[in-house]
Structure formats: C-alpha cells, structure tokens
Length: 134
Image (cartoon, rainbow, N blue to C red; front, top):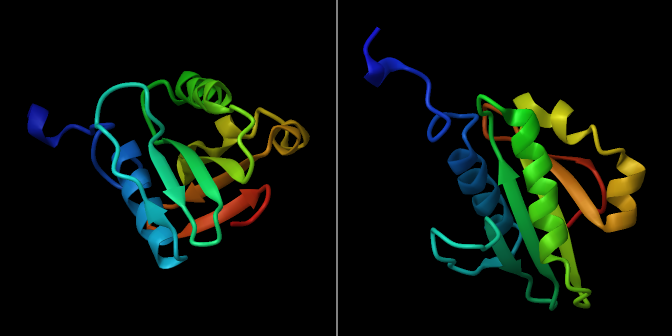
C-alpha cells in the first residue's frame, strides 16, 4: 500500500480539521460569528460570538492514533482558557468515533465546569451529548 493511501489524522471524516470545519459551519448557521484565529500558537480551535453577547470557546478533537491522550489534552486546553469571563461558555467537540474517551470525564464534572460535549459524526451531523445547548 502506498503512503498516499494510508489513513491520516489530518483529513477525512474523523479528523480534527473536519470536526472544526463542520462545527464551525453549524455554528454559523445558528447565528454565531467566528473569529479568525492564527493556525499556530496557543489559541482555541474555535472562538465564536453570538449577536446576543455570548462567547463560545471550543476545543475540537478527531480520531488519532492516541485519541485517549488527545482528549485529555483537549480538557486541559479548555481549563487553561477559563478566565471567569461573564457570558463565556466552553465546549469540547469530538468526532463521534472518540466520544467514549471524552465521556471518561463524568457529565457531572463537565457540568460543574461549564463544558458542553458535542459530537460530529461521519455524515457531518452535529449533536449535543450533554451540557447546555447553545
């Protein structure tokens, strides 16, 4: 098999890039305005604002060779971005194939931290797993 045909965590329906793209489009359809962020550096995957004044900070994770560790890193990234800003909510958005790793943090803990959990499935459907809907 050639290297060109091998699976890559950077593209395909379960990749982080696809999760970000699909969730961003879904947010825009819900009336959110997305802030363009640099591709590299310590920035969230998505930073969005709603016309009613709410802000949403999102970390996204796709399927990788070490999805378990990547999901742990996603929670850490969200925690580091929490600054007690009013009207700011947080979400972890994951490929449907790795949601079980995200659910290792109990929903009660995510709720206490104000983190909603969303999935993007292989067809591009966005679904709230738990937490506050946007």
